[in-house]
Image 1 (cartoon, helix red, strand yellow):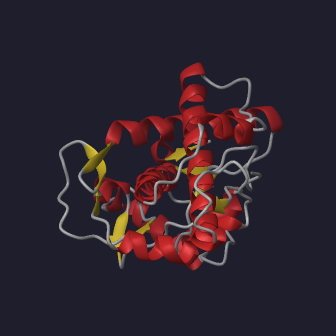
Image 2 (cartoon, one colour):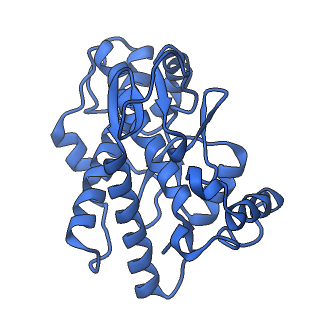
Image 3 (cartoon, one colour):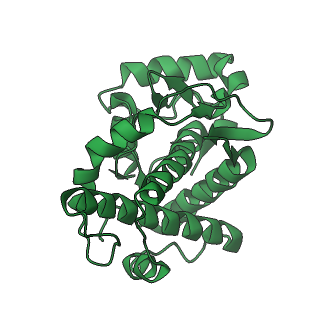
Length: 252
């Protein structure tokens, strides 16, 4: 299955309008559908970025991916001389949302007894590549993330196919357009899940994980407040997405 990519760094999930604009500006394509996840009776566990149906997503796992994402952008810019600096908060929120969606999609597929084989994941991932100059550990982390992302896409496609034809129970012959067939079901399914998010990793509002400043302490700083105001003013996609942020909050 071919997915929209930024040099094959692929990420899932529709976002709020402002975040979607910034996603396009950064060249990170958004695919799949786990955009509306209801918060219901699930408290945060210490050291976690999010909790999904009692299953933890650790801060360390998200932070490691953010570090890897920053390394990806830095190497890409060094090699091509092109690219846009990225707010760390954006990557933190984006990876958190993807890790949440992986768990939701996996549960939906499991409850329908649908399978995606490692072989088909490997086949659909074979064209993915990462810059040669990346740190080996960052490369490994992003590679694993991309495999999980491909698996989630295939799970969505087989869900869509199964809803139209119950005899379909695996992803061996699914197509990308069948992801759309799963969207209404997954939207309703996610409303029944229990999700809570550490506010340092995103703002949970009206059933969506919104991208804000990404840090409780940063949100109180004057540079971050100026950046938030500027981002709102540039919500049409114009302007610099990192202007006003201190260097410690920018990568790439």
